[in-house]
Image (tube, rainbow, N blue to C red; front, top):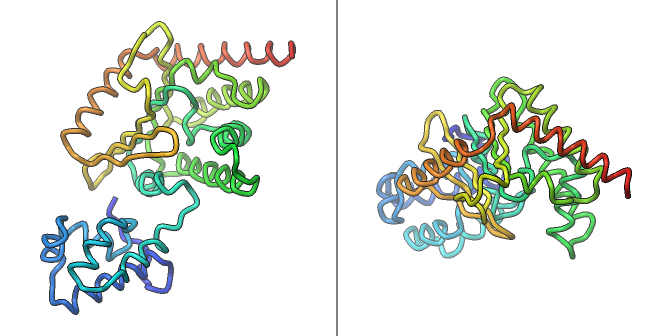
Length: 281
């Protein structure tokens, strides 16, 4: 999770932010730990910014500017460094997602981004970005499909996803899009041993994540984090006690959901039903 990126200050905006933070800190005669204490964070956190291992945060950049007497220099660089292909509120989670050893998701109403087909992603994005230009929609769809590539390769994380049965039944785009999406889910699980999928059926009743999408990420060299998302906003949670509470709730949802085998059977059945809908329309 803390592996440094390319620290050439001219490589990208994040690397330049890190080099400027290091320069300002050293000019002030402060160690990473000393600066962290004054900015109410750890020295390790400062080090992650300096090595471009983590995207800078605007709020912490404001504190650092105050401590280092650098005006709004780091805040301006932070805005540049936070330029991203995905929604800004998701950008930090997307960065951590690429470094995770295990990703455990629970989605109450739709198929999560890592498992979406292009057509499904486009229909879902258009629905949530009703007034956005087609160019913006296509950029978001492209970024989502790019994210899905992390499920392949020798370092791919284990992806354990729970989707509610609602996600199989709510029409996104058209029946043909739904059939393709559900068929893709089955094929993905069959072709990728690192992907586990469970369905939480209607019969299971209420569950802890009814109104929010949750993603728990575990790492080889850092504590786990949780990302929660609702419409147009998201939150990265790192407090150990709260992360543990989310983990317990996820374990309960996993125990309540159908087995992976029964889940695939239900998904196959739902895909066939969408085929019937397609013929009748």
